[in-house]
Each structure stands twice: as C-alpha cells, then as structure tokens.
Amino acid sequence: MRNAAIIGTAAIPVRKYQRKVEDPIQVVEHEMVAKLVVEAMTDAGVDKHEVNSIVVAHPRPYTKQKYFSTFMANYLRLPCSGIVMETMGNGMTAALAFDKAVDEILLGRSDVALALGVNMEMSVTAAEHMENSVRATGDVDFHSPAGFTPISWYAMDAMRYMHEYGVTREQLASVAVKNRYHASMNPLAQYRTLITLEEVMAQRPIVEPLGLYEVPPRGDGAACLVIASEERAKALGRPYVLIRGRGFFHEGAHQINEVPNDMIRFIAAETAANTAYKAAGITAADLDFAELYAPCTIVEVLVSEALGLAPRGGGARAAQEGETRLGGRIPVSTSGGLTSRGHPSYATPLYNFVEVADQLRGRAGQRQVANAELALTSNELGNYNAALVHILEARR
Image (cartoon, rainbow, N blue to C red):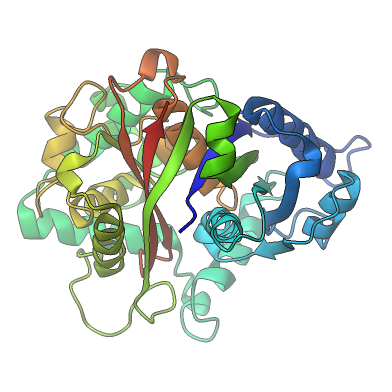
C-alpha cells in the first residue's frame, strides 16, 4: 500500500490582485500560478520532469482563461501520463483537487503530482459576485428568488446555537478575536491588525447576529502543493507531511438540507472525521492542532464540536477560554482562519494545507504550534452538508 505526502508548498498573500475588466493592465493568472509552481517545486526539491499529474481547482468564472488545467500543462511544458484535470465543488473545490492528486499517488499513476488553484473575484462588484453565489449555493427555483445566501444560513445556525446552549454573542465573537491574533503572525493573511472583543461587537451587522468581523472577506489568492509518494519523499532527505487518514461524507442534500434535522449538528463532518480517525488509527484527543474551513465564527464553533475538538455546546466557550488559541489545549485555525487569513474560496482549502505543512515542518514562525506532530484539516460543501477531512502527520 503506497502512502502520499506533501513535500512542497507555495502561496501568495490573500488580498486584491484582479483589476476591473476595463483597466488596461490586468493580472495574468497563469503567470502568477506558474511562479508558485516553481517555488513549490524548489521547496520540494524535485525536478519538473518528475511531475506526472496536474490537478487544478476550477477557477471562478471571473478568470477569462478556460480549460485552465490543460492551459497550465502547456504553459509549464509538463506532459503527463497520470492525469490533467480540474475539480469543482464550491468551497470544497481545492480540497477535491488536493484529494485527487493524492489519489494519483496512491494509484501508482504518479510519483509526483501538483495540486494548484487560483481564485480571482475582486474585479466584479459585490452585487454581481453575490448573484453568482446565490445561484451556485441554492435551488435556483426556490432559494435564489428569496436571496438566500450562505451567510444567512450560517446566521440562522448562530441564532439556534445561542438559543439551544445559552451561548452569548461575546462568546461567538471571541472566535474572531482569536483568529485575528493568529493572522497577525501570518504573512499570507489578508488582515493582520489585532482586534479586540469590543471592536468585533461594535461592527455593523451583516446578517444578524453576525457582524463584519465574523464573516469572511472577499479576496484573491493562489496556491500550489507538491504531493509525492512517501518513498520519493523519504529519498529527498527533507521533512515531509504524511497523509495518514482521510474521510468524506455527503448527506445527499444540496448545500442545506430541507428535511427537518438538527441544524447545528454537522453530521457530514462527524461522519467524515470518524472515517479519517479510524483510517489514521487515532482519536481527536491525539491531535495537536486543526485547520478548519469555517467561513464564519459560528461555523468554526460547530465544526469543532462535530470533529470532537470540543463537546457539543462547548465550542464557543472553548474559544473564549483560550483552549483553541495558540498555546491552548487544541489550537484551531492557526493561519488566522477564513475570517482573517482570508477566503479566496476556490483556493481556500489549499491555503489550509499550506498552513498545516508549515506547522508540521516547523516553519510557522511566531505562530508555531510546539512539538506539532498530528493535525487535521476539514473542508465543506454548503453548510457542511458534505465534508472532506484529512489527518496529516509530521515526518522528519
């Protein structure tokens, strides 16, 4: 049985890169991504001729170049007998690209594969972007006419959670404060200025009860990971990150479940995590930190509970009491999370893997988790109606 490992990473800081369509000078996405490929392969210590598969997170529609994966194969001059393809799955898009690249290694079709993605969305207005988002995340004949957006369903989760467990707004808001503290030490983060609980609480509401600092900002971004067989990773004589277990579950619902259920229990995350824990031969208690796909403060709370990082009803209190902060019992979102590191959604999962690879290779600087050996990443589709979880381990 082959194993797969992350051996190289590269990413650009999350911010605005793309210009308005009428501007005379434009960002060229394939040039940006090609530089990251070179950086990631230099980090990995492998030659381009070893790459046999390229899996690309499908870009947003605001990227003009179509068939981006084959275009990149051409631009990089990388003939492949493994696979050249793109993945699509809304917020899980880049996680699927990573997972498919891992499959190429496990199947023996490649010894070295690339997983890469670029997300450009800042050239269009917020209204145009939201119109596209609403059509993608709901039933166009039911949700879309009502303007039912992802942030609105997260807000309903927050209201229900506060009602069920007596959680306060301040406890939820403490997640944003914690994440900004982590982001302040991350050169890839979009927002790095420290914020206080009072500042979070004072921001204008976006969808009640979530305020400006508790929802994800828009941003552009791009990242590349080099994945290899463990045999190739060992031969390099460098630290690498072993993919030790993974799990996936889709509850058969499109973004949100219209069948009455426990709306603040993320069943897909629970199920995927249990599969990943079993495959890795560990429990949640064995983890040293976790990097989560959590667009809002409430999502980090609920998915932390689903993954077994905190008891049900205890996720917000864990953040308030410092348990999920660097130096705490189980640091969560050490990159700064989606609310502060940024959320270029079709590339976001790759940023999560970059953070884990930096931590497990001891390269996270001031935000380094001491003696980090085991980590978890989670990625979602919709309101965690589907989840993809990976367990990763440091190998030095």
